[in-house]
Figure 1: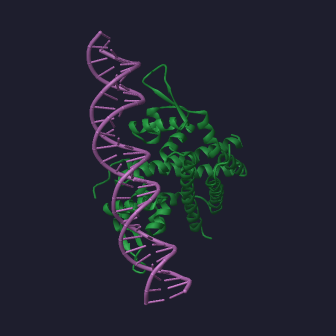
Figure 2: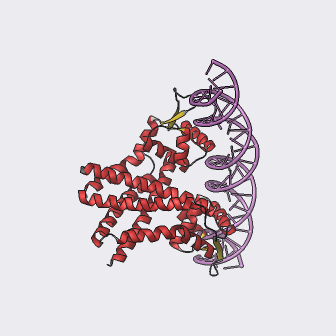
Figure 3: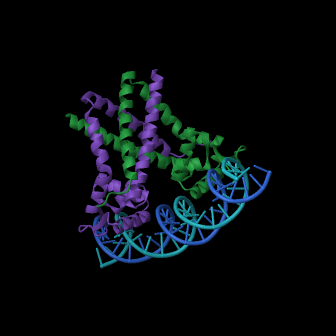
Length: 155
Length: 155
DNA sequence: CCGAATTTATTCAATAATCTAAGGATTAGA
DNA sequence: TCTAATCCTTAGATTATTGAATAAATTCGG
């Protein structure tokens, strides 16, 4: 098995992993009875704690109006709550509700736990290598994201 | 830096990579003037070659009706074409158009090229380790996807 | 071969989600 | 205080998705 083959194998595995992640998101949304957008909001709130509506909007890539209705839906399903900021009453902080935290835990908890356990099977040096790989991939993507923001060159 | 820290670093990097991938998809769709659904179709067609409408539907996680209109849109923007299957004329094969191939190449080509170059900097043994890591992560996700398909247990 | 059952894709009406633009409330600064 | 800026919400128009009905083509048992 040549090095070129190994590169291809890694590339293919990355692709499959992305597909699997997408599938899990789809199934999770279905399980919770919400749509993908609302799931994304839930995920951002989990990762980054309570956010204002506009922070959530940019974190989830939504416009203001869409964010308002997304929060409405999340409140209606009891997964999140609006908390008026007492210091600046224009602001609305979106908190995960207890039920929201539980739902996230039920769905991603087992995956995270098992992932941790599997990572612990690697040595420290191996983990460093894996992180290096991930960081390089991330840098690559970040660089190209910047490029994609620029206007397309003339044809 | 403890092993536990390293596990966390890897976990965080994975999360960031997923976010970056999502962002690139968003920017790519905007660049092409299409929506995320159509972009997903484009991606599946690139990965798996010409597909029938129903194959594309299941590959992209869409219903039949949604697939028809997605193909309509892709045809209208000139990124894909319908080709009637001569053997079984109920079937419609969806092909990427030349312009579609070029668009995909313009957006993901540079990322893929650079990713390849960076992977080649790793040794064969390192690439094997990286693939092991990715395969384990994939197994983990696949297992939990199966779990998510099952009905929720009684509370 | 014939005709019923199946497969494949499309259409259509209803529903849902999103965007943009305008509005109302609140705060910050001159 | 008055004005401008900020933050969220609302409203109307647009776009996308679903689910069911339809149409066309194929398969297969008799």
